[in-house]
Each structure stands twice: as structure tokens, then as C-alpha cells.
Length: 110
Image (cartoon, rainbow, N blue to C red):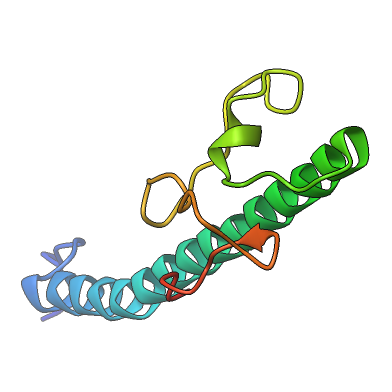
């Protein structure tokens, strides 16, 4: 006698295996994506510092002297029509003090 009543479908064990595989893949992928986002923010922060330092040099070229503090140039709408750049990691403005006519990044840990 042959069995004619074969059910076609997914068993609970097969479904559990698929869920476990997806969980393992997620555990690998999520930290990598998070690290990439952090690296991108750190590079954006470094670019912002370069932009601010370039604006300091432009101020020097126009005025024959360096600004006393960063806010002297960050409030200049001709240099920053959309507002001064902020640190994307800390979501805060850069320190107002200048060190050797450059943006002070001594308390920036990235």
C-alpha cells in the first residue's frame, strides 16, 4: 500500500531554522552598518573642521589679521549662509576658542 496522503508544507523545525539563520545574519550585519555610520560622521566632522579652518584663512586674507574667536567668522553670513557647521557626532557647535589660529579640537575625541 502506497501513502497517498503526503502533506506539502513547511514544518515548524524548518521555520525555526530559517528564523535562526536570519537572526545570525542580522547579528553580523547590524554592527557593521552602525560602524559605517560612525565612521561617516567622524569624516564629516573632520571636513567641517577643514571648512572652518579655511574660513579662518579667508578672514585673514580679507582683514589682514586672524579672528580672536571662532564666532567672529561663524556669524558671517557671507562665509556661512546656511549657518556654521556643527559636529555631526556630538550635534554641537565647535569650541569658540582658537589654538594657533585653528579650530580647537583638543576636546574632540574622534
